[in-house]
Length: 163
Image (cartoon, rainbow, N blue to C red):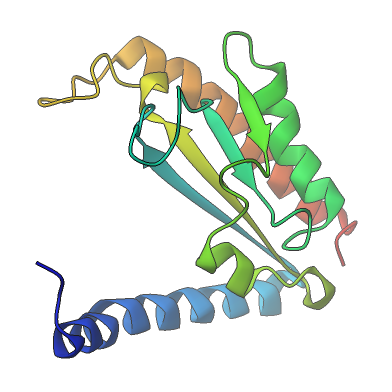
């Protein structure tokens, strides 16, 4: 059953608004301290969602709204490690072009860059059904790629190239 209008408003007031108030405050705090902020909006997603998409989703689904939500070097620093990683597939601005959070916060002209990443669960799970068996080997391999992305974004932000 669909939620009522009152339930929708209660959820927005109880969850969405406080979450985004805290996120906005953190983005502004980081930007005030460093002159630039990069919001890396990363989620887990099932590898197959037949009622939404045909076939298997790539492991790395990166969205920047066609480059509108971040400077090109941010997009490159995120996509390059994914594309270089053996055994993973990557798509940029495919099915996921950047959700509301990415589009809302990503304002590169003001020093706030946002990028979305949907990670297919097959990259770190042995099974994508209950009990969702974690695969430590897969997760370690994925963690290395994600670590490189975050390190590269940190280096880029500190370089002054985005200011």
